[in-house]
Length: 135
Image (tube, rainbow, N blue to C red; front, side, top):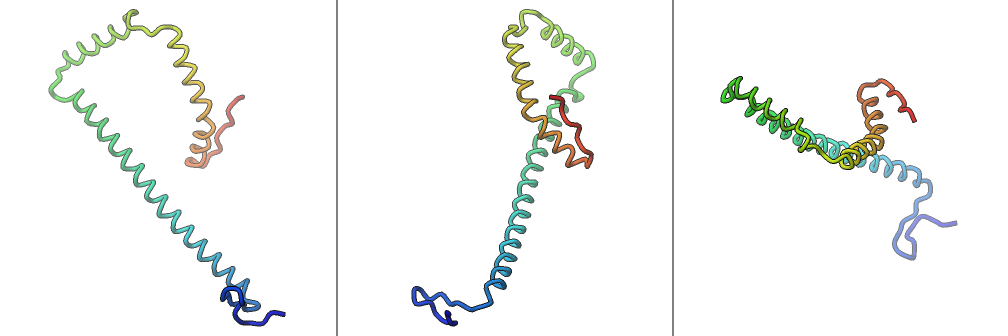
């Protein structure tokens, strides 16, 4: 039987009966460090996302404000709207059918890939179970 003391191979001290206590203490320290680290990292990530969203909203607000500022009269607004509608409706500005089909196909593929994730995220946020997508 090994007695308390120094291990001849490297100075490791063995104390009978203390392994469970040491393990519990170390596990608690690791758990606390993990929890605090996850909390700090999630706080930083949320803050970064909040900053990105704020910048995007401010940029969008500036764009809308310039579009509808007091500098544009109602007549000018309707003139621009009419011109843009005519441009959008002009067949020479239309995309080729192959390009349209590829875009629609890409949108379907992307939405099929992200739909389960977004449904789960919405369910987690709202607290309501998301309906299962039809296969």
